[in-house]
Length: 129
Image (cartoon, rainbow, N blue to C red):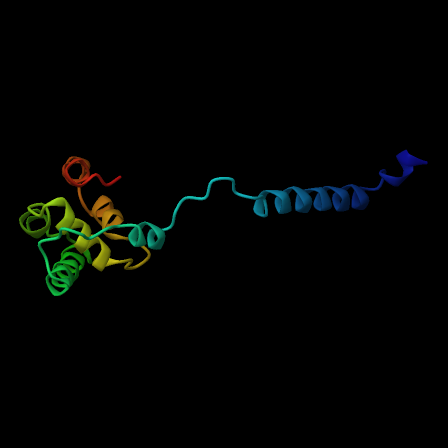
């Protein structure tokens, strides 16, 4: 009796389709164990104590940094002449004010726009990943 149930081609395809949907559902809806913090969470954790910048100065640097990186070409001279020279608390201040733009925080923008060696300089100096 059982061999007869699975003997038709249509039944075999239906069972294969159902099994595929079950496995797909298990893959898509599985629980993630260690979700990565999103860009917004990282920004809220940044302390800006001891910054040499006012909020307005940090905002101007954040906006100009975005302009320097947004588009086809990156103005690396601006980034090194204006961000890289900051001390850590001031860079953190700009990082926090920069926020998330186009789904990326400042560190992610730098990673995407600088060469590996250029990004390593920022990463080493400001302890960003």
